[in-house]
Length: 78
Image (cartoon, rainbow, N blue to C red; front, side, top):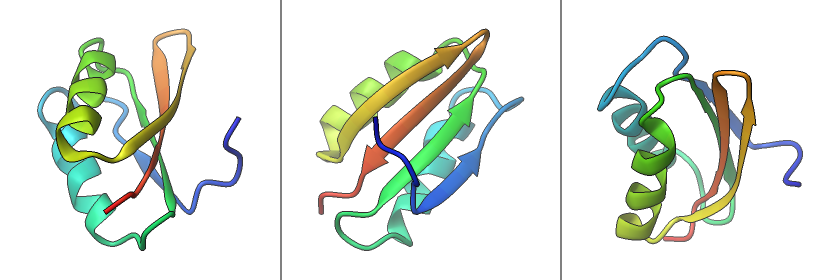
């Protein structure tokens, strides 16, 4: 379980494509190896984050789901 993300991003209440756009922007400001925690209640966000991570090469460490809210932990790899 990745604890202590370097940056947290709250995308609750936002819908596709905003969580991915905000995640992409936040990742630009991290250094290699840092971890972003993004929360979203968009039902599409799990599939979106999986495909975005695969496409960009960043490491999707974990997905948690608590009720309707997802928590994603992504490590910057490039």
